[in-house]
Amino acid sequence: MSHNFTQQELTIQSCISGDRKSQKSLYDYYSAKMFAICLRYAKNQMDAEDILQDAFVKLFNNLHRFRGEGSFDGWVRRIFVNTAIEHIRKNKLNSVDITESMESSVADTQSNALDRLFEKDLLKTTANLSEGYKAVFSMYAVDGYSHKEIADKLGISESTSKSQFSRAKAILRNILQGNFNAAAS
Image (cartoon, one colour):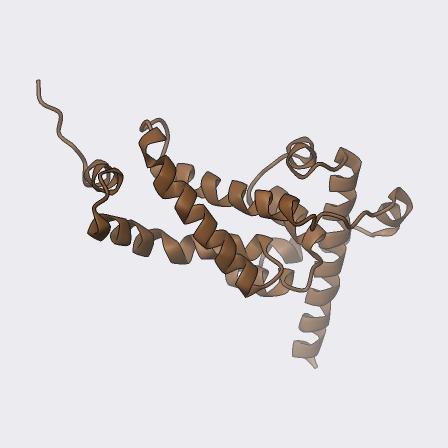
């Protein structure tokens, strides 16, 4: 019984074997999409480029571990998100702490405004957030981590994760309202 390999399986095997052309093809295919993920977590473009480079090194070093369980795209995405989170932890960018009283003062109005943002608009807007807020917002709102998972990965409390997310939403809401008001004028 012969196994019909998919193009993706052949590319992965070629990359594992060290084929530079296949590695470049894989890089070209994923670099723009993964750079957008890196930008969501980084404090600036240079840091995002560092995360991208580190994550691609991890990707190529660990390709042999992909077992075909689940989507390859999802597996690649996890590597990039986890590398970005490691970057944050390593650089102690999660030092921003919000008190519970500040969290309770944030009104949760007009939350639909965030739902209407396109990803590139979200990237531009989240660039105004501090690193701690940006990381928690991206992990929770975009990548689907729970506050408990965020707390574990960033080494913060679950309540800090919740309050940073709440504060990030409030800041983004204020930015958006300012932009909408300016556009309406």
